Image (cartoon, rainbow, N blue to C red; front, side, top):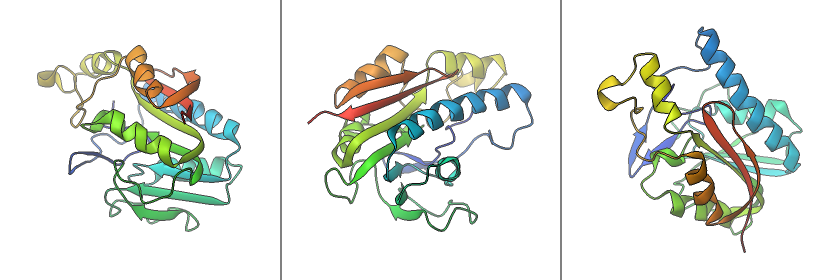
Length: 210
C-alpha cells in the first residue's frame, strides 16, 4: 500500500511526507480494486452530506479534491489545503481554492464549512487528537476522515514484500489505528454517524461535538 491514500499531503511535525506508491497509476488489478473501494466509500459519504462548502485538509496533489469535485453535486465553495502547495497537480480544477495551512492551525472561522474532509493524514501527525479538534472547530455540520486499518495495512505490505525491515510500516506513518482506536479518536471531538470499512481503511463521518 502507499504512504497515503488518495487524499495525499500530510505532515509529521514540519516534515512533509511524499508518495511512495502511485495507487492511481498502478496497473496492479488488486490495488486498483482496493482504491475503487476506498473512493466509493468516501464519495458515498461525501454525497450524503449535501455540503455546499467543503474544505479538504491535507490535499497533497489534489487528487481526492478533484475526484470529489467531479463526483458532484458540486458545492458553492471547495477549498484544498496543505502545509505546502508545490505538489498540487496543474490539472486541478481552477475553481478549487488552494490554501497553505497546517491541520493544527486552520486559518478559518469556527463552523466555516459545511463539510471538512481529511483522508489519509492523521496517521502522519504527532498529535492526531489535536488535529481532529481543529477539523471539528471549522466544520459546521460534518467531518469526514479516514486512516489505514492496522495491523492489516502492514500485513498487506509484508505480503507484497514491502517495508520488510520496518515490519510493513509505510514510511511516514507514525500513528497506527485499529478500527476501534480510530473510532475512539474521532469520538473525542465528533459524534460518529457512519462508519465504512473498505479494505484496508477505516472511513468515518461525524458531526462536531459542541
